[in-house]
Length: 181
Image (cartoon, rainbow, N blue to C red):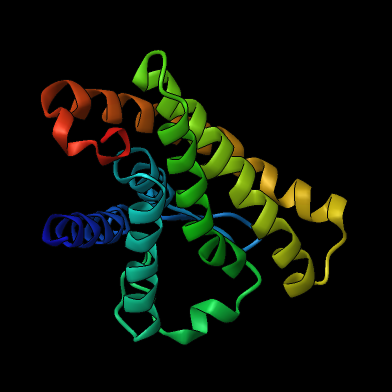
């Protein structure tokens, strides 16, 4: 139990640390950050439940006002913007990513983690973020989807990085990859 809590807190801190990297904001107002890589790693390394809990812990800290999002943002106001669907989708994305890694046991872990990140960190996340953006920004499905398209290449790079990092940690310290425990 104590080990699980430590990993959950560590990965919440990782998501926060990735927010220190400079963000790039598109014309739509939606920022591109490295924090989605942290969401993917929560799933690939911690697994479904612990990964989702790490993200929930991070979001609770943001909600109470800590400036942990990219650009030093925090507080309840960030959950009211049209792009807040990404924030609400993060725990679900981490859970889905972790579930894929936990269930897909045969094969190269780097490839599995990369594909799991595409499924959870892009597919599931966008399935939540796009409808939320449609409502929050009063846009149709086509316009909202087009607004999100510029994020996909960067997210695919993050998926590859999640696969590489997960495999490297697995090789160095297999016991630290809880999704495989």
